[in-house]
Length: 418
Image (tube, rainbow, N blue to C red; front, side, top):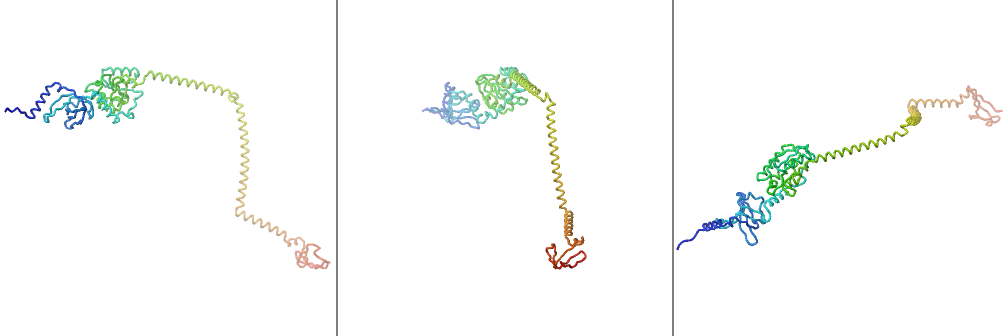
């Protein structure tokens, strides 16, 4: 019997070759839900399962394809995978080898945009408290955009029309394509070497693919970290990029960015004229009011008859002086009396004075005693009549026959009343 058997490897290879000849299997789009998505860190290859309600198929995406993805696939995403069906000969399993992945119903750029937007927002790159204030009167403005595009022309024309005294420095860059993101970052860094007040970063309108460099993470982070206040001006009014969210100010168009970066010099001149008119009006009004006040004051008596006001004041002054002199004399007299009393009090309290006063008083009292001394009276020729050692001061004190003793200054005699 002829042996028609084949090995396991041979049959798997045969099936794989058959699949490679099937045009439908070599270029196929498969719709399903991602499950068990994993990326091996060493190789960078990603493995996952694509499933629907009734079935599933293993899938792989080599790192060489994965680097072109604009978003990070996650479990639960409904996607459309473009690739081919092949047999993994080692295990005898067929699998979907993915070349690209798009979210079912959404473009991959939109998915990447939303994912990066969410990531940077969670990191705080969109917070208002980080945004720098755009200078009101800039002296020098930088522009990072294409050198020959409509955007740079619109910006220059608008700034020169509105604020011609401002200097403009252009930092030309690619604004679309794979190299644009690196070129934009390089020119933003270069612009910070100059003493700029404001930096405009942007381009004219285009498709989402054309605008994509301004959705790149490295561009967003460079704008966020820029030391110069940045105005983002990408595309048209309906276009939004990640750069708009991280910039200090978002303008709908490059022309709008130019308008918001500088004031209108005609408006400034108009305001200056308004201020000048207001100042002139205020000064004129004040002069008029003060002139009226001066005229009113000049009609007062003090200006018409200044001597009469002087005489009245002079009389008042004379009256005050008289009152002052009188009061001064009274005060001086009172103080003089008080001083005299004080001096006398001090003198009287002096020990020598006290002794002298007592001595004088003693002498006066002694003089009084001498006046009363009967012996002195006798010396003046008077006598003292006594009876029984008692002084007789009246005739009524004696009777006839009483014996009396009469004393003289130099002696005494006895007498008898007849």
